[in-house]
Image 1 (tube, rainbow, N blue to C red):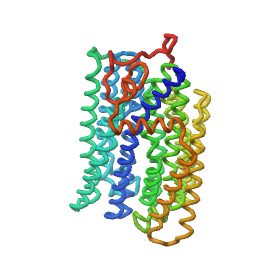
Image 2: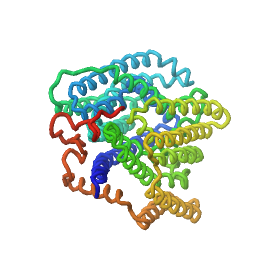
Image 3: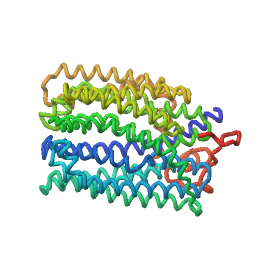
Image 4: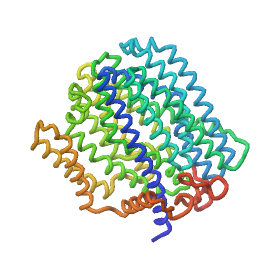
Length: 537
């Protein structure tokens, strides 16, 4: 085996350890959020779900305004400064990013609290005022938590992100929401659950970041605002556009006073569960890509991109098949009236399936320094989405909103695949993905057969899901696992048994730490390619 192949194997194993932990965290996080929506729908009714979703949309967009793009910037520059053994710049980057994010979030929170009555009236629902003001109280906490966890990912550890952002915060929010509903606190109590979970998670995130920073050699912080702001400003606009793509339809439905906002958001949440693997794989993949591209290792960039895309597609396909075959059955869990969103679920699932099949192409652009290009992609997608929503919502309601979102998602992801191909020579399509699609087709046939054989049977969803998963797994095993698949499975099995990795420092050449392993010397490995020159970024 060549040295390059061995090095590539090490990166795949290192990403597998972080990605496996992230996947577990994402699964539990999505389960917690799903249960919050389910409880609100069952106890308070679908209208209150719509109110909760609108306030949460405002929190998400205001949070990105507060972060000023530092979520991607902190991850990238912490990883780069670790690779360059630049402790002063690392400390300065962390301090500057946290200070600007926290300050801007406080200003925005005050403005939101003051303007809550006006915004509630624009959304044709004065009952949103209390929720919007409690969201304003949560905003600084969620911003600080996001910024701190983004910085910890620069060490290529997924533990703080997973345990705090994906387990503690949504889990605490779920438990407090249950308590609020049991005690009769209603929707206001659910918003207070958001406040308490957010502030306690922010404190834990700061403690986790401080623990990692203490491992860096003492040094006087050096602030490089120009470098950080140039990257982060473009990333900021890009993130706002991508998050706007997620939430603008919810807000526009409110502006058009559509009564089915709750139904739409329940369908959206169900589809989001299917694509849960994308975010944790991106989180594990991003710091590795920043490191590899910084060193000029394009062969490893292409390999890791292909492996990451394969994970996303094969892990999410059974859920997509279930959404396409049994949308009404799955939505009926939230209540009979929600079953009208079956068409919305199918349309959204098709758009997200393309999103999964193109892999973390946006992360490739961001972590290779092409944030301006990614920003342009996201802006085009957002403008297209808004125009389509303005055209389709008045005529088709929530079905029109779903069509607008899926069309925008498909367009932007196809454009990114072309751009990544030009930038790195990488394509997301592999033999492993083809096998996964073949297994998905077999599972689709099995699910359709169950639906046809037992129409109206109360246990049809259970039978259908069982058939889909069994046929999918059986077909995957029958077609055979790739070398990378076996490597990932062995790595995850060894991690579960507590067996140490094959090499120190997280299997990453150059000694840059992965997970929480301390760096062997200095801050990390060198940020140079084999010729000794600095890699342009």
